[in-house]
Image 1: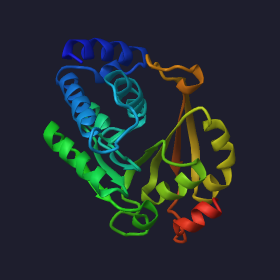
Image 2: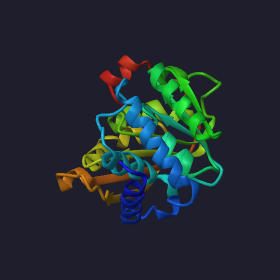
Image 3: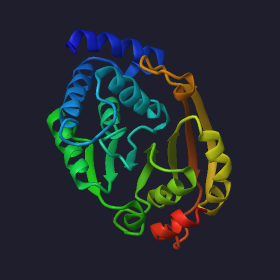
Length: 247
């Protein structure tokens, strides 16, 4: 796709999703370069099932940036289950004031994220390769981040136990969910209580996606939770327990 066409589509999508503030100046060039990097790398590594520019603009970049307004100025962020760097890389472009760490168990993907950040000149990105339920017990990472976020990683009951131990007391856990979000939230009430979270808001909207075939697929929930106290030391449990007996 030619750069001008990319710019025109992006401008339309960002405006429709109320994120135009992140489509300015040098940021436009960085998003264009990131799209090309991702699609090129996707030929040799399974970063995403999305393999066209319009899909990347709508379902990766715009979708990732819908959480940007919920993140405090200058926050330290941990993106759990980042995979191919979503939302890490779009957030790093859009919010140069934040420092974001990308966490995933696949080392090759984290190597790509770091290489992409370096090529784009994003000095606010770092990476960790490992399993969340193990690193969440490590004093080096436990209760160190202002914001912990996750996008399309696991059911909310499971995701909460993976993510919350990384968050500081008083910090935010932000979970990005699709059309099943309301049901997951209902099922997760015990997990929220056990892990000492208060529910702050459900930012519910339909993602404007040019390539969407089913309106139901455009449904989005951004759940924002506040961590009210330190995580009990018994959490996170081993992953077999988390999966077998979710909170």
